[in-house]
Length: 259
Image (cartoon, rainbow, N blue to C red; front, side):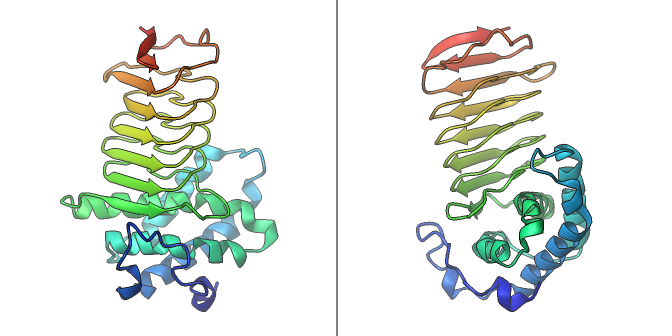
């Protein structure tokens, strides 16, 4: 994938409120080329393993993350470089062949690896900002294994905060399924709606959703060591008889489940 194609619509999707100086910054082209190499490698090796039903979701996500760690191992980049990278994703999707476009959402694994790697090396960093509001296809696995503070401007796909360890993830938009799946700590705050299976196999931490929440909330959650709280601003209209695990769920300031 050629760099000139990736940068064809330079900063088209940059969010003005959070990146007012983005166009004045020098683009880290080395970092963006490295991302292009990772993406090309991932598409070539894993597209055939991905189908429309996301068979092998977790394994492919872990492999994508591990592959990203390999590519960025000796690379120097900043939180601003990670933010700037978001501006080229629609161009990446545009230049991805139709037969391999189902690989595109896994870019979220690359972002997660970059944030975690940078946070481990520069623990003083307070916040990472990702711009997803105009993406033609939302990303999965943002905040995978997270320890940092991330603000996502826009909506996301599945598995946000997967196996999150600590930190804060704020999504200024909607999310789809498996929000906070297997998370062990930290806080996730969604300003919009969440689809099904929020808190799936959740082991600890807190999730707050300002909008609506779909079915199967807290499925198999189990607060063995750390407390679990899922807090909904609105009423929860769905059945909760599936709940067997340990944790607390509050909806519209009323406790609807605790064990």
